[in-house]
Image (cartoon, rainbow, N blue to C red; front, side):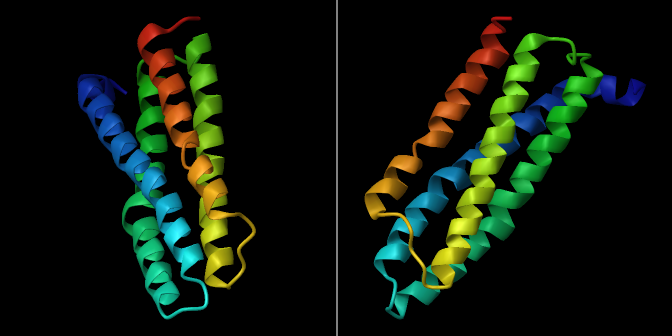
Length: 145
C-alpha cells in the first residue's frame, strides 16, 4: 500500500487518461452503429462489423477495465470509501458500464442483421455518456457531499 501511495498522482493521471479513451470510444460506437444500421443488407455492413469489433477490442473494453482498476485503486489508496460523492460517482460509472454493455449487445444484434432502434434514437442515445461524464466530473471536482 505504501508503494501505491507513493505513486498516487500517477494512478490518478492514468485513470483520467483511460477515462478519456473510454469516453472517446463511447462517443464513437453509437455513430458507427448509425452507419452500420443504415448499411444493413449491403456489403458495407460487414465493414462496419469489423470496425465496431476493432473499436471494442482495442479501445473500449480495455479502457473500461483500466478505468475500473485505476479508479478502485485510487479510492482505496486515497481512503475515499466513506465519502458520499464517491458512492454517487460509482453509481454513475456502473450505469455507464451498463451503457457500454448495451451498446456492445446492440452492435451484435446489428451484426446478426437485426435493428431495433431508429438512426435518430441511436443519435439521441449517443448523448448519454456526455451526461454521465459531466455529472461525474462535478462529483469529483466539487465533491458536493
